[in-house]
Image 1 (cartoon, rainbow, N blue to C red):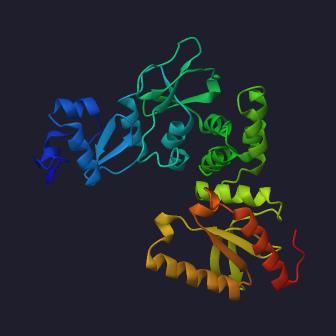
Image 2 (cartoon, helix red, strand yellow):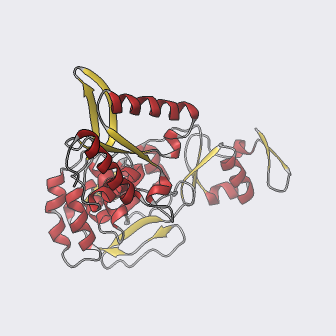
Image 3 (cartoon, rainbow, N blue to C red):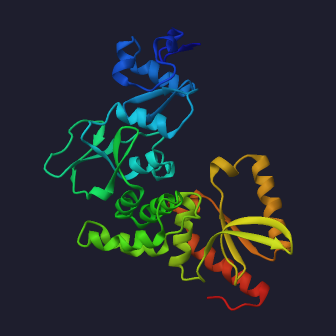
Amino acid sequence: MQIQDYSGHPLLDPLDALPADRPFTTAEALAAGLTYDQLRVLIAKGALRHPIRGVYVAARVPDSIALRCQCLRLVVPEDAVVVDRHAGWLHGAEMVLAPNEHIHLEPVRLFLPAGRGRLRNHLADSGERTFRTDDLMEIGGLRVTTPLRTALDLGRHRWPDRSLAAMDQMLRLKSFTKEELINGVERFRGARWVRTLRLMVEHVDGRAESPPESVMRLRWIETHLPYPTPQIEVWDGPDFLARLDLGNEESRYAAEYDGAEWHSSPEQRAHDRRRREVARERGEWVIDAFVKEDLWGPTAHIERRLREGAARAALRFGRRSA
């Protein structure tokens, strides 16, 4: 593989100097003779992945829990505990990572047992935290918070959007029940952001397939429309017609989130149009589609559009709107 760095100098098979079947650190790559610019080019060309700060892996190595453990073991001290979003990532809930973290890497979330101080380097976002024995488990030689403790930690976030979305993704793992999550709230009485956790935990639903779907559901709830259900199946007798991201079966109103990754190509948009048209006509639903700009930023007016959509459904089907 011959590529050029940003100054236009050719690089002859730079991958030959790097491990082909395991992750490696930035220091290891530099010791092999590569530069930071060369690493950036290899990532831009799709030859390398950069899963966490300070660690790289060849793109052809498939992602797995074992690989994630290998990556973390390169930067995590033996007595540290992997927590929060990186614990969730390690358990298999990759969508708990911060928005765009696959592009702009953030320090790994690590905590030391109380009394051990904190890690001080650019790779770790660290501090001290108190754990019970049943809060911790081992995965691939790493100490990590259990899925339940991870969900309770992620739910204690300043922003309700992030709190609900993270807990939804953790509940999707089916490692604990919603009742266990609710029952775990009181042990954090007085902790930072526990009020957000207490408010959001009642709305957690593991059927949400992505963080934007969770945020869309929260906006719906805040609008005080009839309570929404994620992933509603639409049938016409024995015929399955479609699965809708969010809706209320009594009002026959539904909302869908069209993320750029799965709903941007002409083929994907055509499929969405056909699926929704069938659900509208044969399934008798009113359906609105939303994109990122509807949920965040200066053009975010999803609450108004949800109210208008529910009103259209009430007119069409003769039901009283909330």
